[in-house]
Each structure stands twice: as C-alpha cells, then as structure tokens.
Length: 446
Ligand SMILES: Cc1ncc(COP(=O)(O)O)c(C=O)c1O
Image 1 (tube, rainbow, N blue to C red):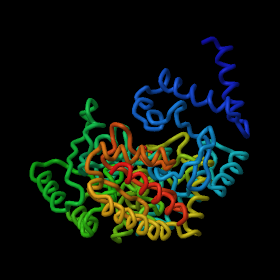
Image 2 (image 1 turned 90 degrees about the vertical axis):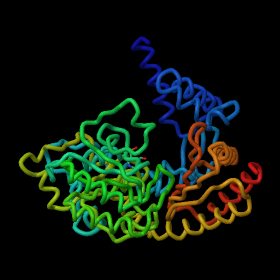
Image 3 (image 1 turned 120 degrees about the horizontal axis):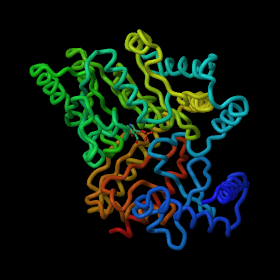
Image 4 (image 1 turned 180 degrees about the vertical axis):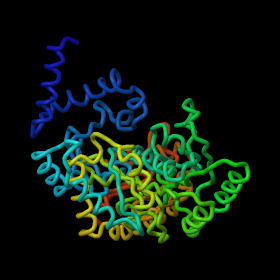
C-alpha cells in the first residue's frame, strides 16, 4: 500500500472514531471490513471460531459502544454483557466517573516524563496500601495481568535468591514467558518449553500435595522461591478451593521459607464478593497481583504488590532493576483511582456477594428443572462457573444466549465450562432478564 493510500485509510478510520453516530451503510462497512482486516492482517482463527461470527447471519457481531451492563453492536442491537471482559468490566461499560477522570487527566498529561515525580503514581501506590491485606504496602504498576506475574516472579527470585516455583494444575497466569512457566494448561505451553526455571505443579486446593512437593524439592536440593495460585481459579471455571486451603498454604510457605503469591488479576476488586479473593480466608500473601478491573474497564493497568520487606529486593542495590515506560502512566492511574473510589463508595464487593448468591441459586434451580445439561455450578460472588455435561451442550447454551442477546464466553473449540462475569453494578431486573433468556435457551437445548 502506498503511503498516500495508508493515509487515506487512516483518515477514514479516524473519521469513524470521531463521529458521534454512524449510518447503517457505515455500520455494514465496519462489520464487513473488520472481518476482512482480522482474516488478512490479524488472526484468521479468531474469526473462524467465534460465535459472534459463526452464528451471526449476514453481518458479524461487531461491538461498538456500551453503558453499564449493556453494550451495543454497530447496528445498535442491545446485549446484556455477562462475559464482562473476563473480569475487566466490574464497573460495567464506560463508567462515567472513570471516563471523566481519564478525559480530565489526558488533557493535562498522558505519559510521564520518567524524570519528574508523577503524583498519580504515588497516590495510587498509597491507595493500594490502604485496600490490600496485612502488611502489603508497596506497588508497581504495569499495563496487563501477565506483566504483574512477570514482576511477581522476578521480585520473588530477587528476594529469596532462589529460582523455582510451584504452581497449580489448570492455573492461568497469562501468556508471556514467565507467566507461561507457571501456566497449568498444556494447550498454551505446547511448543514453547523449556522456560528456564524449574517449576512444579500441584492439584489446585490440595495443601497436602503442596507440602509433599516442597518436601521433595528440599530432599533433592531444588530451591523454590514461591508458591503461586489464583485464590479462586478463574479460567479453569470458577473453581473454589476447600476452606482450609489458603490458610494451610500460608502456613506451609512459612514453614518452608518460601513466598506466597496470590494472582488476583481476575478475582480482585470485589468480583468474588470480597475486595480480594484471599479475604474470604483472611490470608495475607507476600505478593499479590491484580489487573483487569483495576482500570475501571476504561484503561489497561495492573499492579503487583508486596510488603516493605519484600520490596527491598527492588530498591537495593539497583532501584531501576524493574521499570516500564508506560506502566503506571497518569491516565491509567487516574482511571484506577476513580475505579477504587466507586468500588468502595458503592460497596461493590457486597453487591457482588448478594447478586452472585441470587444468580447462582437461580441457575442451580434451572439446572434441576432442565436435567442433563449441567454437570455442576461453581464460583463465588459474581464469578460463576457453569460446567456442562459436554462441550457441545455448552456451545449450544452459549450460542443460544448469544442469539438472545446475552453475551457469555464459549467458542466452538472451548465451551465445556462457561463463566458468568457480569458487571458488579448489574441490576436485579437485568439479572432476572438474563435468567429468563437462559431458561428459554435451556428449553431449546433440552
Ligand atoms: C488469573 C489471571 N492471571 C493473569 C491473567 C493475564 O492477564 P492479561 O490477559 O491481562 O495479561 C489472567 C487473564 O485472564 C487471569 O485470569
């Protein structure tokens, strides 16, 4: 493409970005061209397996705008969002206070100088210290969940002087190299190993297995820096561990002199009915990671956090051992400050607990009424796992809901378990509407 063509192409899309409304013809163009752009220039596979394309009819489901628990495609069809960016939309779409905070900040400065002191980074770090458990009082900000895991593994190695990690089977911690080294799912590891450090996996929720693995490592002389786990496994299907798991894991890590890392990228910020997943069991990890909803569904931002003692490993001898040009930029910090303010002021963790108990209870009732579909329902708060008897049934439920304008996860190649992760601000009326549409779908699937 010539540079003149490229400029015209850029101009066309810039004009679309800047327009308040779009005509039906423009909507058709956007939908058609988006599919072509994905196939020719992004990743054909994303188009071939998504139900928004395969089940869509003439035009692929193409998202455009959203507000609260609802979003609209380019043709202005309204959907209730129960996928919620896999936990990134705790505050729903375009929360007005977060949007305003970002707009206000971006007009002043978007990216820091990296030399002068940037106040919002400091304020957000101080704020995180006020909302994290126990003695966790230091934070480092990045742009995504996987980067928080990279940072957590790095500081754990530096602090302990050891290199190995223990993780859990079916764990999901992100897809960059360090995160993949503790990823508990073979589909994402295949073809990418080895990762460098000696890592081991134990069944999630099995404290005895953790202790045994540490004992083996000690006996054979393999040094372990930390045990890492999600408080409630998200990607694995909202799997809640036995109640004694986290307190015992804490004790075992102390006994063996290793660090405990909680990956709260998905469970953090109130999703499971408490501010942090570990709060269900009153446990303070040594290092905690969060991302997704930290930016209020408006800006990408992640944080990994730890105590002053652990943080020494980042401060001495080289305070620049870990840096990021864009991580913790003023726009992202403004969004996170606004998001935390809304989360605390509007008691969103409590709302998640109440609405989650209501929604999961009703799905259990539907599972009994329409037997043969569900294997079990799991989760806490508004992280609800629907486990189907087989993937084909799961896909029928996911695509049936999509046709009825309720968005849930589940693709042609992955629908055995589907999570419901609506906005924590979802109303009772919206939940009831989702349940009605779910019942209609189940009737059809039966
Ligand atoms: C528990 C957990 N950790 C880490 C990640 C990676 O986050 P990101 O996709 O922002 O890199 C995810 C993403 O789903 C997650 O659920």
